[in-house]
Amino acid sequence: MRRMYFLQQWFNLSDPAVEEALYDSAVTRQFVGVDLGHEPVPDETTVCKFRHLLEEHKLGEKILGAVNLHLQTRGVRITTGTIVDATILHAPTSTKNREQQRDPEMHQTKKGNQWYFGMKAHVGVDSKTKIIHTAVATAANVADSTVLADLLHGEETRVWGDQAYRGQTEVIQECAPLAQDHTHRRYRYKNGIDEQERAKNRTKSSVRSKVEHPFQVMKLKFGFVKVRYRGLKKNAHQLFVICGLVNLFLSRKKLMLATGA
Image 1 (spheres, helix red, strand yellow):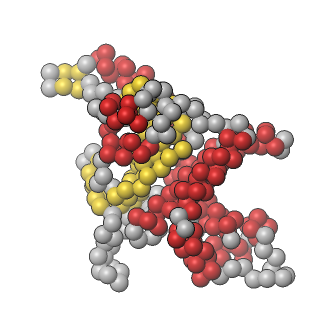
Image 2 (tube, helix red, strand yellow):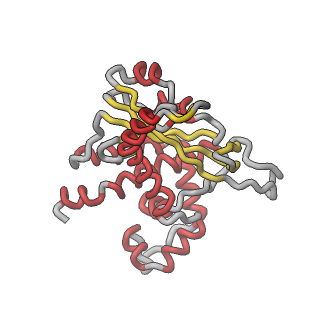
Image 3 (cartoon, one colour):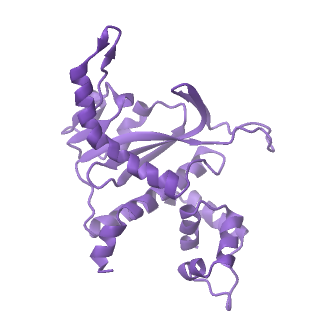
């Protein structure tokens, strides 16, 4: 069931779709360990109950922690640099449902000139390995800086972030006393542009941009662009699991070398 659940996240499948995929593909059945000659594929109700069991026991965060511990034993270690960032995951805006309303735990926010409705996934990413070591799920209208303290593991010597985390030096030093604040600074003013500060931000971006790689895998490889469930709790659980699977994907070459594959 665990392998079936991971398969569901990798290919962004609903409960009925993952059942159908196992009947259609011998490769997926081999991975999951189902032999149709001896037993049927678990149906969508069983998949749903298993997911609810994971959510009930809050195993999403534990799965992420177990993956990172496994990577550590294979030489992929979390270092002392953290990049913080957030991305928006869309939620359905339609009111054509039983409650005839949008998800009350999701909210809208404006980014640039466009409005978005949904959830925001905040992550703390290791600046060297690109491993997601911490994740937090909030409604989309929650400011990035308000969850900064929850994204740091405390052993940082440097913290990178975009201008959404500007002015949070005290928070960083409170959570990680040895950390230097390398978040972007304001460089645009009414009277013009501070070219020196702009150049510093550009230099910081060479490190900060690494956070986009986990987001790329999450959204483009796994298709986690929209939330599938109602409520933050269920979607947060899925976020934690996907972060763990993203870490495995990013470390796959090192893992293969470690196992001699």
